[in-house]
Length: 379
Image (tube, rainbow, N blue to C red):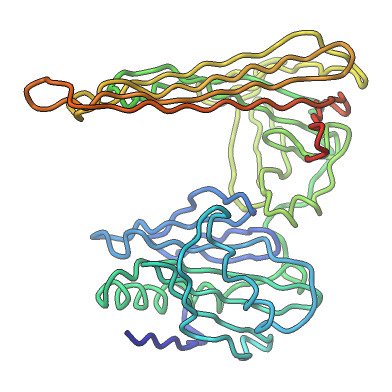
């Protein structure tokens, strides 16, 4: 099988495209694609929702980039495992070696590779003092898959790359500048939802929500890695963390503008915030240096799908204990057991497996966070 990749410049971007920012990159989402979360390395995932299941398993990756120097072709050659899970050991075949090309006056390089039965195309763009990386993944099980993937790559991905703008090169961020606001501190609440397990039974889920506000007009959704005292957007952008932005309060409406370009609106009801079914209350964090004496425990179990030929289930448990001397221990276990059942209801075999693990360390309460450091020194 021969794969030919070509740079196609100056392709028009549809006027109706949604504009988003991820890290340093501002781009237009191609029609028929939707955001689908982020990878552990901070890369934004765009998933295909194209009509008629076209390129059904195709993915576009927008990485947070990297502050570095050098040549784009040499740098992208070291990124061949960027979109491969760390514990996977696939067969990687480089099909198109990177060469320096010109992308709107910037050095760029493209690498094509086959990863088992998938096609990956890595596109590196060299900026001043940094590299940006945009990736594309499609099925390459057979010639028809490759042809479909390349058609979508040329139609949807190359215009995205060609039209990308970069904040470090002078492009205006999508986030409106923050203005001082009336909210400050931590708000917490939760909503509920139902989820069907493997056994066909419904279980109630709790979705905890955290919003932190600062008087300069910024907010963070979730647990701010730097704590509650202040917020510096630079490290978040470098990580591809876009769960922050600026807020505006207008009467009983709270408007959130995220760094990604997305927006959200909540209601203000006295001292509480309302988002859908969730009511968020202002809470006081633990004081710096607080010592905790208590434990947290969870247990999960689900059976296998009825009629699947398996009887049994999967379980997992966690137990974390905090001690007043500043130490903690974490015990976790998991397992699965099943019997194989034939069409007549007879058990023909089975299996059981399980694992246990324990870790211990010290904790510190600082800036509203509990920071746990294992005894081995890992984060």
